[in-house]
Structures are given as structure tokens and as C-alpha cells.
Amino acid sequence: MKTQVAIIGGGPAGLLLSQLLSIQGIDSVVLEKHTREHVLSRIRAGVLERGTTQVLREAGVGENLDEHGIDHEGVHVVFQGETCRIDFASITGSRMTVYGQTEVTRDLYEARDRAGATVIHEAQDVKLTDLQTSSPVVHYMHQGQTKTLECDFVAGCDGYHGVSRKAMPDDIKNEFERSYPFGWLGVLSDTPPVSHEVIYAYHERGFALCSMRSE
Image (cartoon, rainbow, N blue to C red; front, side, top):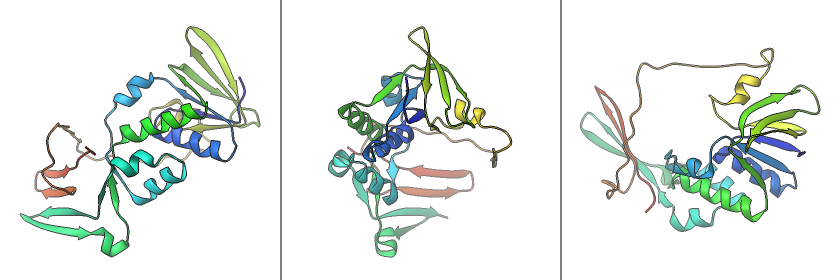
């Protein structure tokens, strides 16, 4: 198989890149190691900034976002028992939108399906070769068969633990990392929101975020 851009990772980053390239007439193939059902079952971030919503609309996937997203003109910050509201709309002219990443991913999948795009799920044992040439090759296993994907460019959209970062040549790779001595625990409940806007709370024992998803 041949394509112009091989995209590694079928999450929102890879799918959005494929969608944007398609609008510009550039062909791409997306390789995702999990099933579509698995990708759509992952619960991730739920608040989108203006720049993100603008790009989604420009990519032609803003219909559900506009219909079901909840616009937020500000946030509440809690510190030492006091609540302070920051009015983003009046200060910056921008709004945030509550719309889950799962929904963004679903919208992108549907858009790529309508365009007849090639998204290969359960692509296993992916290997990237000839990355510093004009003809990179992606090797992978799919349905028990070894396959190759020839391309002009490889776009690694598979995150920190993906194969793309590991395949980048050491002489051109720069890594910047800061480790923090704490963890993050997320709890998702099917309950009415306690506030109509997001709450950020500081406490001597840590930090808390009270967020929400669209209805």
C-alpha cells in the first residue's frame, strides 16, 4: 500500500490530522493498534479551548460540537475557603466548551468514514524504517499478515508510549521532561454537575478539579 502521509495513532490527534490533510487534497492512511470500540471507550479530557473548537469547525466536524457542547464563559477558583470567578469572556473575548474527547473522536471517525478514508485498526507490531529518506516505510501486522505502507511522510500521533517517539533518530531527538511527586485520580459519575462552570480548587493536601461532560 502507498500513501502520502502515514499517520500512526487513531486517536483525536491522528484523526484530526487526517481530516485536515484530506481537506487540502493530501492522502493519508491511519494506523491504530486498538479496535475502534476500544478507542471510543476511553474517557479523557472534557473541556476544549477556543483554538481547538475553531480547528474542529474548520475541519468540518463542528456540527455536534455546536449542538451539544456547553459554552463556559469562565471558571471558579477556590482558595483558602473563598471562591473567585474568572470571567474569560469579558477578559479575553473567548469561551471554553465542555465537549468530551470521546465525542470529538467519534465525530472525526464519522467524518473520515464519509470521506472513504483508510483507517486500519488492530495494526500490531508497527515498525518505522527509512525515516531519514524520501521514502519511509511502515511495517505492521494486520489480521495475521505482515504488511507494509510506503509513504512520503510519517506523522507520529501515538503519544509518549507509542512507537513513533522511540523510532526517532537520537541525533535529532530532543526530550524535555519534568517529573512531579504526585499522581492524578479521576472519578467519573453519572450525576448532575455541582456547578454550571468548572471549579479549580487548591488545598493543602493537593489540587482538585470539578469538571463535567455535555449532557
